[in-house]
Length: 441
Image (cartoon, rainbow, N blue to C red; front, side):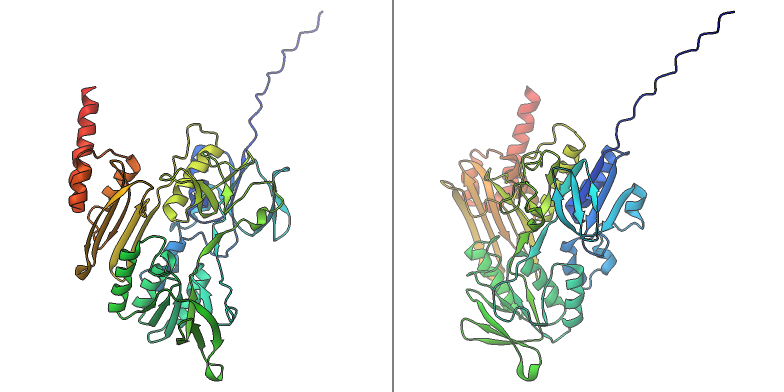
């Protein structure tokens, strides 16, 4: 009797390899990217590597912690207990010392290495310490990490003499928190106005006057030349180039930041001021992406590539990078709009886009010094390309919207040049016209 034929074994379909995504940096860009990757690829391995012992937190929340509006937990980016564990996102506390792009590995300070399929560099920035004698003395702090904020909170007691070096965006956020703590505050700024990278001379001068009226001493067009120990080794003394000597119990340095790109040396990943990326958030290596303060990306207004160290840009970058890492087509970066909103002891200021003006453009300006009201609009042809406002908060969203949509204002440009406060009317007139015309097609 013939033997029965065996049925051929059913072929097993090979499962696609599990993607391994590694994100260096636990700030907003890194966290948003990790959560987006988890949504887009539920089976992928997603690892965040952060070099601080804290849970992922927001640096922008530190002033609220200093002003006692929130506690430490309030600075955390995600408040739900075990948030990352529930999502299957591995958060590791370590520091990446090098990237081996050829073998797709990151080397860790704690020893060993991790292998990736896709890598996101979201390492942010670090404070720059100015080359001033005495900057290494005890009692001098940046305000960049939660650990820094703890030190400052400990020493910034009511009545303490505090010197703040730098009146840029970061410095003025810290200024607000320090003023609320009741310290004797003195601000020293090299530029001829406060917030020089956000405000023109008129607006920056008004912010200075506002601070002076609130009891904050402000030195502009002034440099710190040296920091010394105080008499009998108590406290510190700050020497200024105008001859003034300031006694200080605490000095806070807010003199700028620099993207964290040093660990990429020898990786082959191209850098300039930051990590160079294309409109898909991709670096010179196709398996490596970058986002946030470390990324040198497209500027919406100028078409140039620059580092924009603001949280809204970091959030946008993180989302787009994750979509591209997951292989989604059409996730193209259209450029970040320069945007800053600042509250300085109750005076709200904002700037958008090319607030300093465009080549060949013109402008409209309204200024009420006595009431600290200021509005400046910058045009290129009949398109609003930039704006600055001070003490006027009603239509901040409209300003950004008109800039970002590149809405042609037509006859409304001349009306705005005559009265810049009619910005909402201009917005409604032009957006309704666009909607009507679209409906007629």
